[in-house]
Image 1 (cartoon, one colour):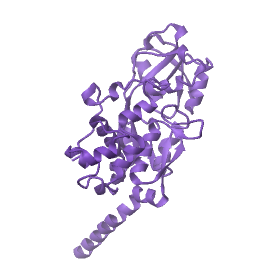
Image 2 (image 1 turned 135 degrees about the vertical axis):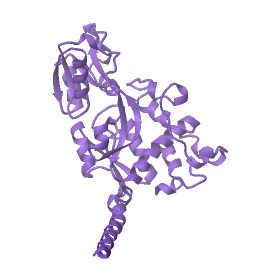
Image 3 (image 1 turned 180 degrees about the horizontal axis):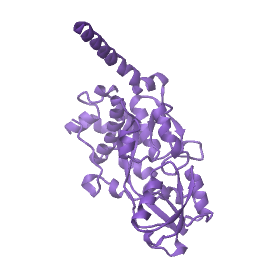
Image 4 (image 1 turned 30 degrees about the vertical axis):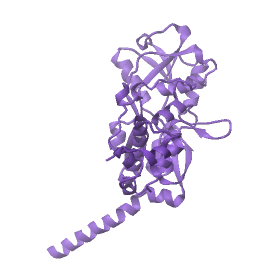
Length: 337
């Protein structure tokens, strides 16, 4: 009996080992389809929005495009609301998500999701009309506040007001565009979401210069690329594609010079990172030219940030915390070794 039981257990274990990778490989599914389904915001300037030519552009668009480019397929963008985004990833409707999604403990441990990499360190803020003369969020007792449901925004603003002994009236909408329109139409006193999101929504208002973001940052909002839990290979691919853009920024490798640097650099880490030597990328299930393809397509982290969010864009955001670790920020990629 013991022998039969041992054989049965061994058979089950072997079956699980053999079935596991095949049933959980997003990489194989994406290659078979020939495209990568990326969950993004429907209309969030700087992060994901459609331009006058019908092209979807933005910070999140670039990072999801980078992963698709590494795999060697085209990205296919799926616009999702805050309420729709996590179920869409959980169900397999999309392969990868970036919709300014904050990494929290419950999302990372309870919902069957993994945060492959943080691509923007942000925080929740509050925007008001300048004409109100308000200088601090602590002057907002009794205010009505427009916000989107289905995100950490509701809990953060509730926590902040409770901690400061204040009350507020929530004016809630499902879509961020509706939040902006309600605030712009004076249906509430304030608008709250991530500071980057406030900058994006302000750029779409009737008179952007009439609005200001208050100095308080009431939460930490690390925004990440999200994958399904249990597919380590796919999560590793997304993580190391992001790390590639960060280290390229640190090493001065750009869209324009990556091909030349791959041929001439004597830096051992650059050689490994760009697939010139070693097997780092083929070990991930990609080809050795994947990193060069990615950087030629989207550029390094600084290029992605400045193109979509930086001082010369309508959002006008400084890099701040998202500067490199050796330039006053906290952006830091592990070594390519």
